[in-house]
Length: 178
Image 1: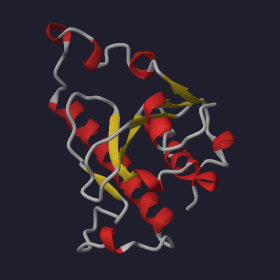
Image 2 (image 1 turned 120 degrees about the vertical axis):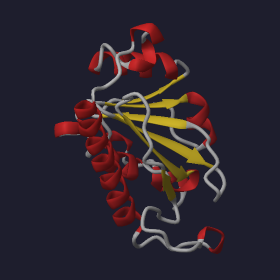
Image 3 (image 1 turned 90 degrees about the vertical axis):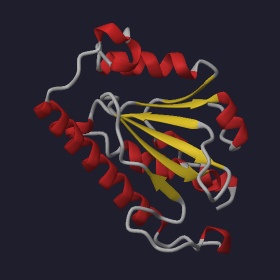
Image 4 (image 1 turned 120 degrees about the horizontal axis):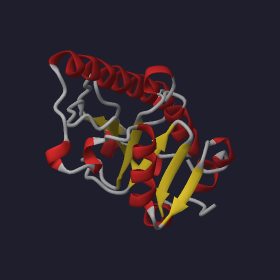
């Protein structure tokens, strides 16, 4: 899809922000939702989850990942797959995305890697719409990859009311800067 068309629906995204202060904005957003977020407090103050809490968190993490996978498959269903992205079919992947269900923390985040040229405002909006109900206070980290082996690149943080893009990612992916 041409770059011009990928970003035409930016106005549909809640809280669209391109910033050089990416890490600071993400930290504030996480702490607003989870004041004891394990990533932002001293290790000595981190409380381990009980077995029951870990099971509940694991279920929520898996559920959000399943929804990310479902949305990705639906979103890319009619997208022609270039030869360099064609690989053996795996039920947890699309040719354009990769997910790892592992979690640490809890971080209240799910990560999905997407080939950079296939990231669009429409895809980000679909992901943002997943952040409701039990996942209202979660974050989806969309990692751009410039290569088909899903090397990590720039992160885009999606919250239910905020999407934060580092300035370098916006520049790299030709995303309009507000």
